[in-house]
Length: 475
Image 1: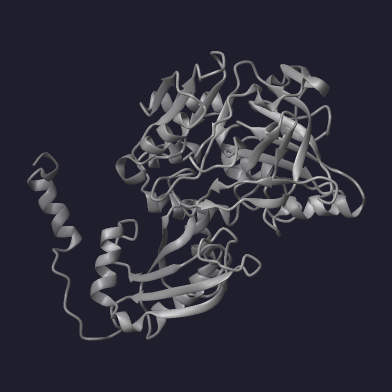
Image 2 (image 1 turned 90 degrees about the vertical axis):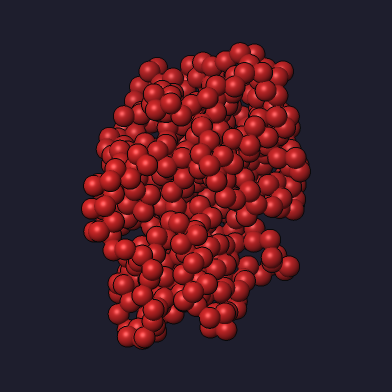
């Protein structure tokens, strides 16, 4: 089992899914290579990429990209068995995550923590000591934080929060921290500022897959995402308190920037433009919080985890939509929607094109499921289309979904719902102060107890019998 990023890379290499690239330049080339490889196989076919001997930097300063961009690598990162199906991964995640038992982290002796092998402070702080890429052609700067994790502490309760937020180099000792309003790190930051204090922060750049995945999730109130990581790993995460802020970070992390976020009326920056998850370059954001970096710690020959957003369908996070699809699935069941047999997102980890399959049980069941999926927490943020299909449709197969849409849903029966909460990064929003957009609900289910033609296809049992009898795999 992988305990750090390096061990996980060894596992990926053992699966034949790691490619090493030497000599690429940080200014555009690494981003373009990542984009081209991630596009293979419809966005889920390229290998993980480990870059070394990067232009202008010495050997050993490395970057890994496309790390989770396949079903198999996602399975490895989630610690699941070989052979599990993509929808099976979502079902397993949502079933177990709904009732997970967190494992609290354990503190280790700082002298044994690889992250503290090298530390610079004061005038020696220089974040450009690392080969931070210019990821996209239109980016407004070099983004050191894409596959990063931000650690903050609630000043009132001591609750430790982990979250994933982007970060751009502003100067040698300053980086941006773009955190959308309402996110936990933003709330904690504001608490410090309301007290007239700077907000301590630790920015982790390169860490084990379990802690990174946990950072993308939402822990229960007053429970740290470290507990989720321990549950995923089935073992406590080993942490160490950083010397400047006292914030806990994984002892085997690759790079940590420590610092403070001053109040916005004292110091802020313009962050962006940046190529974001909808597949577009988002405008620059002014009045963005900054981290004044006071200390940099790193392992020998550190590895940056790069997760630059890519134009869909290329995957830049996990290759399976566990948070979006798994979250919506749970929320539909919790809302009392019966007969839900699966949920999938065809824009991985975003609900822009969400598909729900049901065992239809009554008139209006399909539309009810679609309306609910559009407004539950994991379906609303960035959503656009919700398609509901019968359970004979493979919801992970976009062609099968489109076939159901075009043969089971008359166009004049598509329901449009206006004014639903969405993401501020939604490119269709014209008023950035109003995070709302419309939804299309497409009920592509066969009418309940209606007279409908039978599907022109042999039943599954007979197909399986014939496939085995005639060795179909060899034909």
